Length: 153
Length: 106
Image: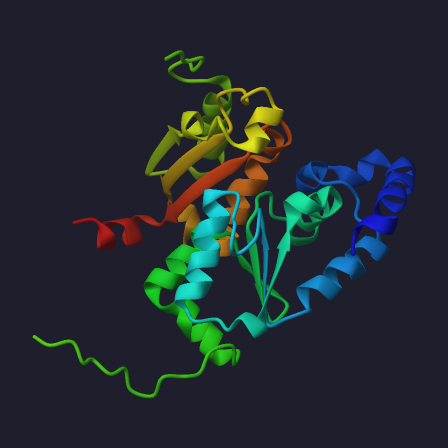
């Protein structure tokens, strides 16, 4: 869905963007056109949970993407509420998602259109319980009223 | 069993300098884990990479006080934007304040 127009628009804009524009942190990123931005926005909003990863849920192609996918699985995120995009299938997406999120690495996780972070942040939120709370608050997974501790002593 | 890694590479050295200048860290540990990732497709595309593509960074600094995890990671990512443009591929980050580090260590 990203391929048809991204290439030409970014090239044109890159040619006309004054280099003084791209100082400081922006130097790491190419200028992202409004068109490219709106395509990614559509992808980000496509499902409550969106994971930009290398490979697929069934066949992740990077350990960090695998970890992110496993955490979402462990949290019980229903597949109907999860959309993944394989950046290895789309070189333009791979570049532009980094600019869009201002985040240099893959995977990247969005919940209800908000950037949550990459693998490390997802993992630490998973461990601290923050991720469960976030997913519950956003209605992605059902709230557990009273955690049933049925494990025998 | 060949290794093209020097004990401390130039990327590692410049990352250490930049993070030290930015964060005045209480402690800063940088581990080069690139050799474990040489076989990845992305690294093969760079000729096995420079040997400085994957790092793990543990940093304790009071510059992180009052900042969310994502803000802390962004501080570090921004400081290392040049390295990311020049072949740095993956960072595992642990960023804590002095107080948080004291609380979690045994």
